[in-house]
Image (tube, rainbow, N blue to C red; front, side, top):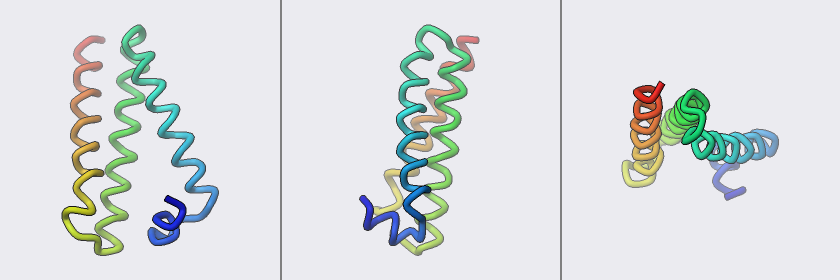
Length: 88
């Protein structure tokens, strides 16, 4: 994974921050089953992160199949965010 972040042109602190934000987002989605607002915010944050990941993939001219996972997770997290929003 370190090599991928270098290929993306991202630094070591950005790689670490990405991992920490993903873990916090996942924990927020789990806690969202009890506190829907937190789940909505966490899923929305993860969706924005996946939008950024997709933009980076497009910027470095990756193909569709390399970019597809970030796009799929963008839509999945967006759907999860709407579910939590409807529970508010």
